[in-house]
Length: 266
Image: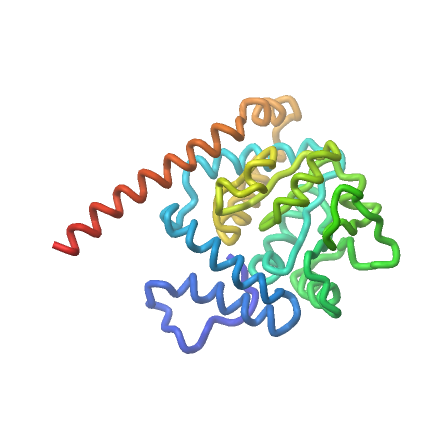
């Protein structure tokens, strides 16, 4: 779990929603420090809704996606980890650690390019130990023609030449654009039917604060395997089935919670 920010002093640690409130606090502090855009708070709240109906835990289906994602990153020639404000605020240390293990640079890529945000996110990543950060020099950026938003601006030595792009907490437009460019896309998205999740090659339907530590643990194990075994893991993964299984998990969880709710309401 990220050590970004301080625990909210007004919330006791035995509060049943302590972890959730802590992450909200990290995002609010990130917004105050220009790391997080205002809209990022709304996006996080939407994600929490899906996390709730997933049982707020990393399920077996997500772990299978994590395994395939890590395998793909390890066999890629030019993997890149794309970083936005929410990810930088919630899991900066984990980003740096994963980046180091799989030898993939971090590239800052933003939808809302408010003045000072690039510098704020760069400083947060450096504080977490990052040394190889791309996307910081706007004068050298190139454009992805398939996009019109600010996300079209990418580093010529990063996303532009990457064969695999890890885009946690991403928007669907850029995921679709990256796919059209022939790149393989991995995402972490709590909404299994978002455009991002549906367009990606591998969709990890999980909370970023759980998914990143799990990816680090998985990468530590898998990096010892030969490329043939890693490719077999990738080959046997089916993202359509992954999405279908996740939706089934959500349906079953809601059914179980309905029964529990009726017991309380009696």
